Amino acid sequence: MEILIRLYLAFLKIGTFSFGGGYAMLPFMQKEIVENNAWISMSEFSDIIGISQMTPGPVAINSATFVGYKVGGIIGSAIATIGVVTTSFILVSIISKILNKFKESIVIRSMLAGMRPILIALIIYAFIDLAKESYVDFKSIIITIIIGIILLSKKVHPILVIVIAAILGLIFYL
Image 1: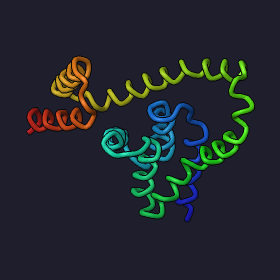
Image 2: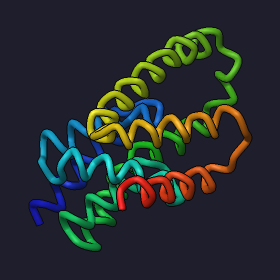
Image 3: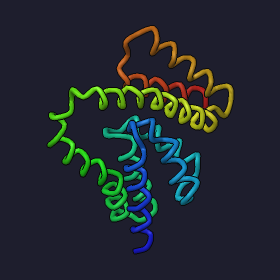
Image 4: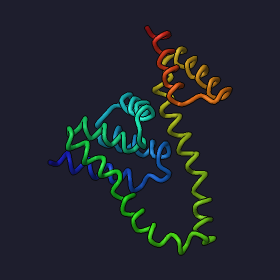
């Protein structure tokens, strides 16, 4: 029972204090999941991020579901997932009622404009942390360069990019 409470509170904290969603949440998630609670390793965290890109849904929810399952089974999975969405659910419910009053406010628009640059910084920080785990050898760098070239030169569907990366992984690592 204690672990379920810890799961809920950790993911409630992630959902409450991680602004920007998605990749902007990664540094905070890493701190809570890997460092503070040691529920998974950094390598497993990197795998979660990769898997989250192949499965539908936001990174935070997929991560909560995975970590919750690993730590507390199906109930843990549900508890962690509920924890990460609790604050957003409450805030969206409240804000949707009053947003129309303030949507033209210069103060609100200025605050939001001021918060955008930090999202880029958080994404870069998450990239650097994940890169440390992902770039283990020259082959992984080559795969990144090939995929980068494909992404920059052609409009390729993300699923196809994932399939190409998997095929390159098979070629290089088998």
